[in-house]
Image (tube, rainbow, N blue to C red; front, side):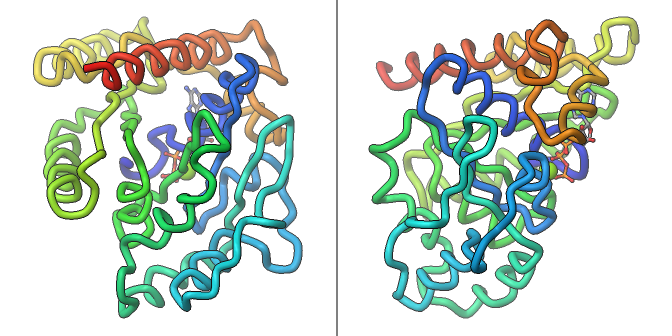
Length: 253
Ligand SMILES: Nc1ncnc2c1ncn2[C@@H]1O[C@H](COP(=O)(O)OP(=O)(O)OP(=O)(O)O)[C@@H](O)[C@H]1O
Ligand SMILES: [Mg+2]
């Protein structure tokens, strides 16, 4: 949910893979017209069966289920995007109930999966709003090298509005520090500052800078299939446990 390269796609992919290895049933949804997640899993869209087509069908009242729209790769299920999804931002503007399209589509799927993880585009528009309206929880990855307190503030405001007006279920599950490098004092300071301001929201798990994460993504596999002993694998496994723990707590409170 943060500008270019904060680790959204990397987190969606590898958190899903960590859950897969814990034998949870996970569905990935690529809601970014850049289609990085679909590319990272080397998915080839057939017969235009992408999330864009589903959203269009839903906006015309013609959606008839997810058959053919969910692909398998590396033991993961994914509803892929294509570049055509970029048109959705404009095309959906005049559609009645435009913020609810993905939420409506997911209705029939929710009971089939333990987790549905949606990868969002960098720009906040109709697609991101659809993701937030369809979600119970949001994870906000932040790159440790920047001091994005302003970004966190505007994100919180936006989330509050969506929760009030469109999706009362929505909770922030946590802020996730990515590309963390303990050797850099600056990174530690950011962690400390975020900790003070947004203490309880910060995940204990930090995703360290790890070249294996980038290499795996380029190769079209997840970090566990690439190198299960890498820091990236250890960090995303730890995140999966923390995510389940937090969801468990929120659901009983
Ligand atoms: N912890 C990490 N260590 C090293 N490289 C990383 C790490 N996390 C992500 N990267 C790399 O940084 C780049 C950007 O990451 P990613 O694609 O996940 O960001 P994003 O938030 O999805 O970007 P966008 O806003 O463009 O969708 C990718 O090449 C990815 O492989
Ligand atoms: Mg991305």
